[in-house]
Length: 339
Image (cartoon, rainbow, N blue to C red; front, side):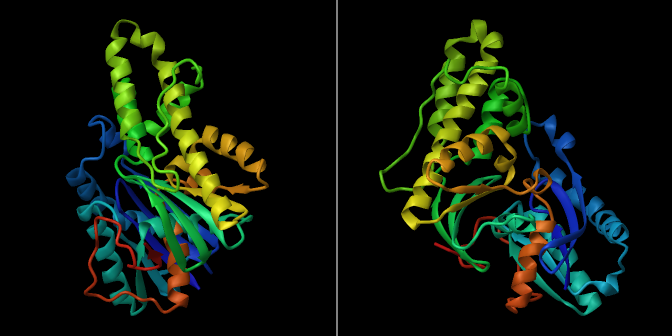
């Protein structure tokens, strides 16, 4: 089965062709990062307009790269939400029109489930059940995954997501948007033990996150050390990153121990942070827990993960209707995610 995946939830216009939910035949991503960089974050109206311009060329390029024609597509999978409404509507409307014109089925995919499915595009995949962290955009969620179609939400952020915290701290110290890679690169030059920022673990049995406190702590530190800020930037970046990573690792290992899972999958943009992966792998090994991460090209928003999730939805006959609409916030139960 060949599924065309389409992703337009934020600032990437992406398309991919995936065979049997596993083999990527082609994947194309048109990024808007440079456009939004000067604004310090994604401007929804600009993102939507750029999706309109990019969607047809991106799909055409994907078909060309795969050496396939439209009549060889068996189904269309498209991000339905969560995300920016205007951006989502571009991809979702295009997918509807294409499915109607080709007389094939289409499925609206939960973006977060797409990230979880990015791990299945690896040669080496975790065994069920396993714990998955999805750290993407405004989400930092921990899931218990006991089948390809069943995702149980164990914990989520109560305020800022990891990615948002990285972006805001990056802006504070003058690195701009996007913050994840900028913070990680600068942190390599700093000492994570020089500046200790708070770790927020919340209630003893909670798997939720809160990153607003560390963000405020960084801001207070910057305001108290303005005269020597330039020389302190690497240590601030390293100390901030270390604090966030410590909290993520604590929660993930605790989730594994509670559910008796021996595998962890980290997905989403934060999964591309090599420092996080290395430290999590070292800590997890102490408990005989394995850590899995998608290829770096699949950590950010992409359409291959949407096609992979769409494949399992098509197999389950979990089709979408032409009167379905997009949603901006995570809609538990919309597909496989349960609270």
